[in-house]
Length: 257
Image (cartoon, rainbow, N blue to C red; front, side, top):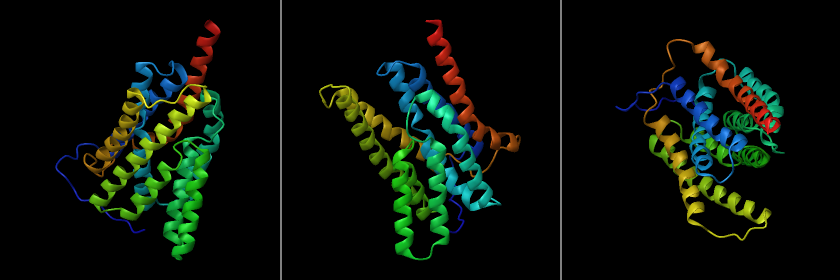
């Protein structure tokens, strides 16, 4: 995978850090919904859908960062370290048995390594499929690694990158609908394709497309001129720290009641 630039547009008003801060905020809203709000309420649904903006943005910047990082070993090491560091806060906040988003991003990173260093097309395909399947046990399963793979393959070709986001939007919407229907089955409810379920499905796809617009239309290819080192580490630490804070808030509210 060779480093390539993406052609400029007239709408590029957001730098990398600004988009990442927006992504952190939307992720926070999603996690507030899942940790603190009542499932199925209007506010819960709005916060949840907004939060789907984050992962597709991070996949884009992972692919970009992989091309320009000074040390890919350190880059991958940071992702793995924070995957391990974040697992306990993730487990406490959500009570999920799966792995956190950093593990998914680490698998995405390994896909990029395979694309760069494995020459055999057959072996490359097998390893990428294996890594994609491994994410079935982590947050943003399948969709994030497939998007990473597609972006890496199509990097610098705006039309194909847009097609990648459209395809993942459809895939994620379908996965989201299936997850919702499975939840109904687990709760002993009759599985009915309601208007709300359709709206949720459509909105989850729109969130992915919005992420695509943020990085393909509004991103200017630059970093913030000030606070680069702070922003770099903030994006890593924000994930485990905010999950731990949400858990403590949830525990405090439970004890207060």
